[in-house]
View (cartoon, rainbow, N blue to C red):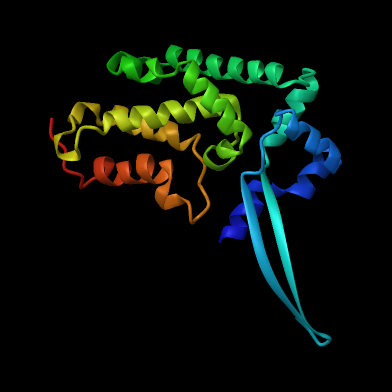
Length: 224
């Protein structure tokens, strides 16, 4: 299950570098200059290979990079972003534009009108942490494509779902169930499926699976 998930969503590092046209020293330079996200998963394995010639034990360590991070590399190349300051500015521009688009949309506008304090938390400190987590590979784990726009949508979706579900299921207003459903569906579109072992502690479990079961299932008990 784990290997199937990793190879469906990620490239092993040597494959990734080959696709990017990079040698290991080029990749090391990008990492040192803080331009590309690190591997999201590292897999250490011990394999026993058997044949008529005998048995051979191999120890390996593999690094897995989100497939869509290839798009980030292509943007770096396209816009000539060779230093962290420029790459970070590009990242944050897309992150902030996603916030503007969200607020201009019907769902985002309704949520912001009801819970204006949620997006107020999207300040400089959060942006700085977001950039750091992007570089360390975190958003390769928890978003579908690891792009700045998607990262904003994931953060916003999680925070709005958490805010709405501060009300327990049995007290949740019936007239807000549709809005909660739309918000959960919005989040579902940007959050990754997560590796099987990560799901129980993930935002997918907490903000999508649990909420659908506890608030949105047909037999969930909600009153106006």
